[in-house]
Length: 194
Ligand SMILES: CCCCCCCC/C=C\CCCCCCCC(=O)SCCNC(=O)CCNC(=O)[C@H](O)C(C)(C)COP(=O)(O)OP(=O)(O)OC[C@H]1O[C@@H](n2cnc3c(N)ncnc32)[C@H](O)[C@@H]1OP(=O)(O)O
Image (cartoon, rainbow, N blue to C red; front, side):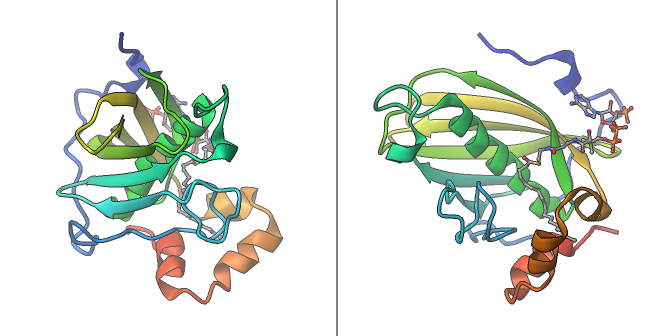
């Protein structure tokens, strides 16, 4: 069974996504957008440490290893953690568009249980863009990139200005992000597609 509500169907005037000319080349690691990010931050001890690699077009692949701390049922990944991994992979696509966007809606199908120590092989792509709305889809497989399907998600991201974070975030963390000595990460956080 597949659940995708009408809100995740691109409208008739939606267009195909356009890869930014300066997007990382296929095969290149995207790196983290923020060191403390729960999904991708290398400095986040409680995080998923998801590593995403650019694919062709507006697509990427990513891997996430399920750890002991990610359990729901004994020995199995918590569904919310798997949804977080999908959200992060889908959110990372926006770097290939050079658009700052946040998740508006995320619909997840949990197809089979994912054991601790399994590597979740994620594949995500933007399917359509309509104004500020970015439609994307992702799958997560276990046992290898072509292994059995374990999870899948469809999502709607909404483009925002950097003010979104300034207005809603905490001053302390915003300042730390602005002072990040990692120039690449700073660029990724602040660069807005004009
Ligand atoms: C100075 C320091 C700066 C640091 C910068 C760091 C940048 C780093 C780069 C990237 C960060 C990404 C981080 C990745 C992490 C993974 C991704 C996440 O988990 S993100 C977190 C979870 N998501 C939220 O917290 C959103 C909370 N929601 C909101 O803030 C608003 O609701 C927002 C922005 C999504 C929309 O609000 P509106 O007022 O701007 O726009 P409206 O008019 O409501 O919506 C625009 C269109 O979208 C549709 N829409 C909005 N939400 C929808 C929904 N849930 N379902 C269906 N349609 C929706 C609406 O119907 C409307 O459509 P029509 O233009 O009328 O056709």
